[in-house]
Image (tube, rainbow, N blue to C red; front, side):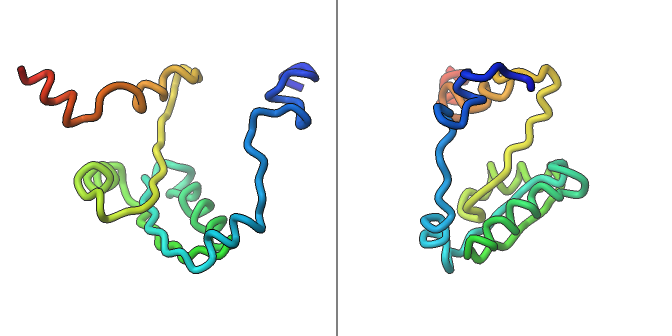
Length: 119
């Protein structure tokens, strides 16, 4: 056991994790078309992306996967926002901390940051 009993992240009765409802998910996802783009670095040859695709399919979604190299992923995610619905963000997180990956999701958006730094 990595965490003591009674700690919310380890105690199913008081967990902070969102409870899942497979039936409700299936109702929402049934027939929903999802364009998933993921970098091949998520598992061997992008197996993690395929896992997500199959999990969504099992819930009833119609999922097409673009399992691409990192360069194509960057080009699609940042250059073609209308070409995808869902993506997998791979962060190698060598430090093993929560703080490292969070920096990618806080602060001004890219256009605002670019305009600010150009002044």
